[in-house]
Length: 106
Image 1 (cartoon, rainbow, N blue to C red):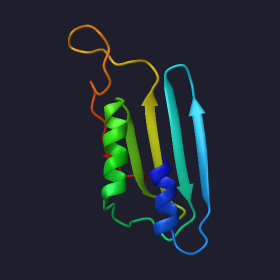
Image 2: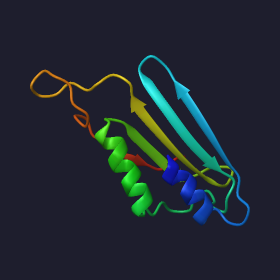
Image 3: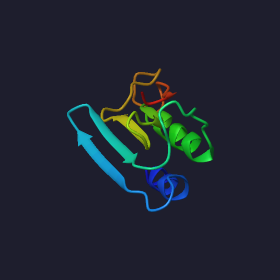
C-alpha cells in the first residue's frame, strides 16, 4: 500500500490528504487508502504500473484489490488479504492459489 500513498503524492493534486485504514479479523486483513484528491466519480480507471504491481502482489497472496474514484471525490485503493494460507494442489499450502482481481470502487 506504500504505492497507493505514492500515487496520492503524484496524482491527487496540490496538498492532498490521505487516510489509511487497517482492519483485521480472524480470516482477513484489509488495508485501505483514501485520498481527497482530484479524481471524480465517473472518471475511468486506467491502471498504470503502480496499480498493476499492487494487483500482482495482492494476487500472489490470494487476495483482492479494488481501486477507483470515490463517490464523494478523491480516489480509493483497498486490498483484502486472507490471513489463512491457501491450499495448494498437492494438499499443502501456497500463496497465489486463487486469483485476485482489480475492481473499480463504486
